[in-house]
Image 1 (tube, rainbow, N blue to C red):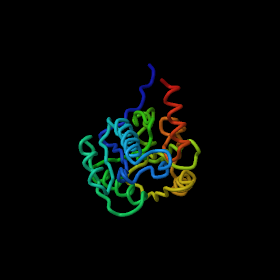
Image 2 (cartoon, one colour):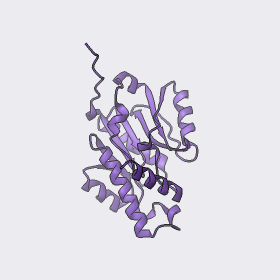
Image 3 (cartoon, helix red, strand yellow):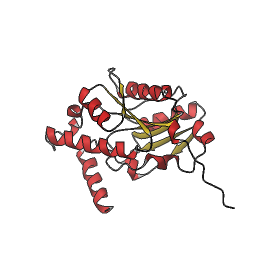
Image 4 (spheres, helix red, strand yellow):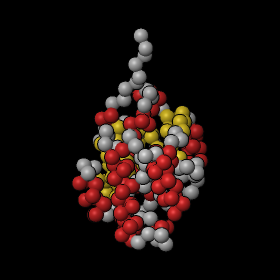
Length: 208
């Protein structure tokens, strides 16, 4: 008989999505888009990420009332984090997921316009492997870290920013964790620059 694929208890998995105030997002695109267009783009990408997380309980980490209301309207839990910085926001989200009895956290940036089902990141993996490993989905330049899958009980030091992919790999190795890298356009394409936006639009058109 063929072996059955491992099944993961999705109720023990939480998706953590830090989202900054919509009006502050995508300022690097200010020469290309109006403030209203940047807000619309930011919300569009965040909507895509929330849809990709629909099989899991989702925790939106924010410090803005409008973002909090937006998240609640989409059935996400709000983790209020007034401290400055993405690393602190992610840590707060993962800790909150742990407090909600989540053994595993999927941490995702909110600006992934092509994001698909996050369950694909867990496919064919055993509970034992996921409990002792880190999964990294880098951006298309292998510089940033767009998605991380990790056990919530780890004292993992998040190092978002320039060359975070290399930093996160080194931390995983230092902790003696197995490392899995996922190169997939669904998670590799984020929107920071005009080039990113053009690339995402081109890829989305070619996939239709």
